[in-house]
Image (cartoon, rainbow, N blue to C red):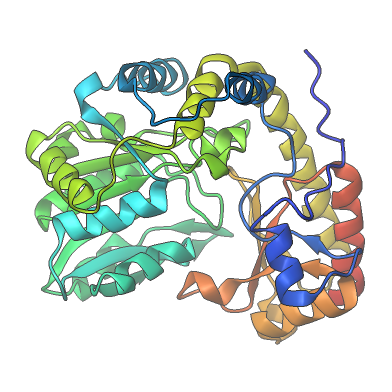
Length: 389
């Protein structure tokens, strides 16, 4: 089957957070291109769109039931794609992984406890920690030969006494690092030694490029199972984030119950029915689409990185093993990320993410979403180079 990722699809006026949100902020200039929010400008796999059409034709849109089909779809995908076979009763649905992270913070920490993140990191980690009245502790990643590494030795020296949880982004966003098994094992030992709950957000685990292999934390470090929460979702993989559906996978029954109790207290029952139908269809029938997508994204990445490195003095894209989110160091320019972003929108007609929002180590960097049809990507590249060179 051939998938047309070059097709340019108009997203304005579709309640798109990325596109309509950009218009609300910067105006309805038809030349503006959004390369910010982490979704893709590609149609979802055909089976996903077909199941939505079928549901619409049926015409009755009641509450969802049938968790067994969802659980089996998750098990089949994790087994075939990642070599890990969770038990059905370990799996619970959640209303997206940001929601799940907030619930984990409520379930496993108390007010004023410290939650550790490895920064710069997905900005909603910090937002969830602070919004729940916890203390955010940022362990800044080390830059080693142009790539990120966790500095557990420094973290051990700085670890606050009230630390109770680690939020891990695996693969890492931004930066696209795919953590090696030995790095995950070292983190697992650290969490055991310091009695920390470990929440591993693995939402980008399928968007891994040739030459890298994602390691599920539960498989890489099974000794952490009594303190581990694994979060997965089909949303990034298959471009169905609007379904607001993810999964927590927890083998420890006590932790499972604590999370279930907090979820029930918030009135979060069964998932959005359309999101659940999309998820099952994607996991069951979406693999050919994903296998076609990954080389297309890899070429987009290389195309963007070559242009930035060659045409913008001082621009240094980080080598990207995963995600469709380029992370580019512009600090040699001597400009703040806010000023770089302002120039990109004003002079290049491209909306970007200022790296400062990702926490310590993000200042002077930009995050650029290259999951675009190539004709649009080429326009974005020209705009960036015009504005920032």
